[in-house]
Amino acid sequence: MKRTLLKGLFLSLFLLTINPALSATQSRSTTGTFEDAEGAKSAFNYVNHLRQELKLAPLAWNPQLQTSAQSHAYYEVLNDQQGHQQAPNMRAFAGKTPNDRAFAVGYRSQVSEVISYNAAHPQKYIDDLMSAIYHRLGLLDMTKDEMGISLAEDSKGWVKGALVANLGNQNLNQACGRENRFANGTVLYGGLCKNDVRLAKTTFEQIQKQTAASSPKLIFWPKSGATVPPVFYEESPDPLPQCNVSGYPVHLQINPNFWGKIQFIPSSFTLTNLTTGTAIKPAAIFNNLTDPQHHEAQATEERWLAFFPEQRLNWNSRYQAQVQWQENGTLKTTRWAFFTPTLQNLHIIQQRQQTLSAKSGETLYFYFPPKGCQAPQQANLAAKHTPSLTFETEFVDTQTLKVVLGKQTGKIVLTYLPTQTEVTIEVR
Image 1 (cartoon, helix red, strand yellow):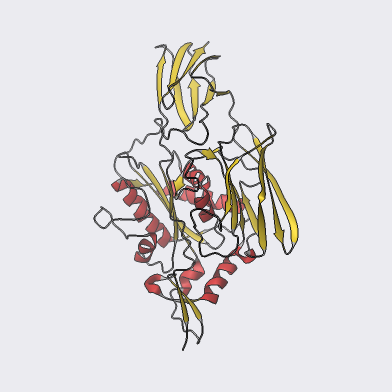
Image 2 (cartoon, one colour):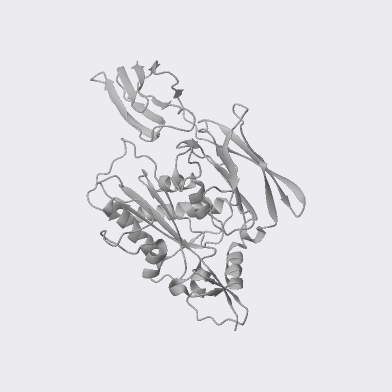
């Protein structure tokens, strides 16, 4: 009996990490490593909220995936590690790879994994993942229908918090647990299941298409009318190795049932700041076939297209994205708009020394624009002030500072240490 075995295909696992800088204003009051179960559930619900906004089916909660995610989140925080691999000689070792850890707790099919570190609250962990294109594609994957999330935290080391999400497919998991018999000439896929159980190519493709059947043929993020952060920092692997700070990426994603039927026209992809009327220059525009990181090297058809702004987007702005695509020989245009957050009393600091006045009790924001797409990765602040004056500071992101003034009057001198920029606030 002749069968064809294709080993290692379709293992497009988004094994990625994002690591935003932990600002000096974030802290943990707890001691020892612990799991934030409520935070994990909040993050899970938020992922489903985002998916449902795009008319994608919500992900089911899977306890085995939660356990495998929990084992890795705990390992990361306990050992102060970042990444998807575990070492057998480290504490709390649960399996070298995400698949190993999932298989160890009884899950039978391959999983994908995304990780985010050191965020201030559960929703921020997910927002950080959504700002990074490969992580976003993983969370919005139309072929996944179940997930487990864990959030572990402690007060020691660099990794003070790690959110790990493992995603899988219910029908694929069941298929990997069945005893399969194959007719002569059946094309088989290996590498999909625990113990290298093989599946027919037609079975695997049918599961993918059935899972995605209820989803729209085309989705895009940010969705129309959404408010998203203006910035993307870095993820690993890095889609923009020449930059460590750039604008929030915009992308479109094709339902697997329409792969090969929709073709994007990358040169038509534009982004415009409608508030200022200016066109946004891209650092890159690419799809899964031209992706420099080759994440879906086995694909032969377009699956997504992404626009990466070269510089941070502006606060307080409305943006319009537009792209053309063909379906069955017909040229179509998709156009939509989204927003960046509104920050009242925003001051853009362009000079090395700047003085301004403010009223007591006000909340102020200071934005320190980076030069191009390179910027210091840490946000640090030094302050001098009138002894009787009270105020609070918090970094919104690495280049944006929030200052809440108390009711007293006096003077504050803030130094943004990455660029040694000095801001004097005269509080009246």
